[in-house]
Image (cartoon, rainbow, N blue to C red; front, side, top):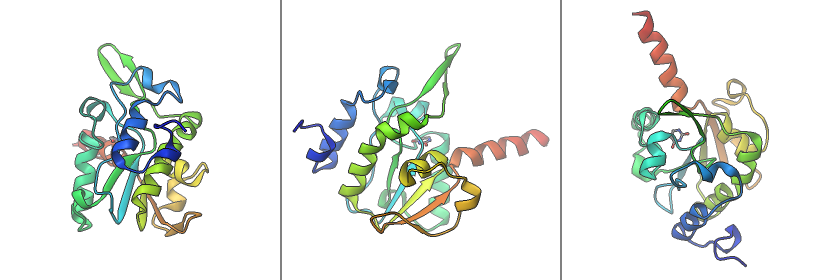
Length: 186
Ligand code: URA
């Protein structure tokens, strides 16, 4: 068995090495690096976002940019310390297109989500969280295997096949967009 294959992985360090070596879909080609999850290996809560953004791609850490600040505030409001939660993404490489010199986020497609799911599954096996919070449609799609509507699932306690509690909510970036629109009206 390949040392980087998900079945051979028994630690977060090995998992990160496997993700860095991943060529299962083309997204690795234009990304700086894979962005592994971050947090304690015995975390009670696992938060799953969509994919790293521009800042995360450069830093190699999840949710360190603008969406991360919204997430930090939401966790603070919920009484959860960020460093007690395990924070990761459904897709580990930054998908983007160039607009001039800017790298603009592009949503991963069903194929890319599916190809990356082995890494999320490996993370779930290692961390074994009591509850997973899916942030947005990509995470909910990866975790449930279904195309989902956030409005219908939001706030409902659900169970994954292995019994893990699942909550689905909006992606922090969508809140940023609402705030921007509100700002524009002032
Ligand atoms: N958005 C995500 O979904 N994940 C990140 O890590 C950053 C922004």
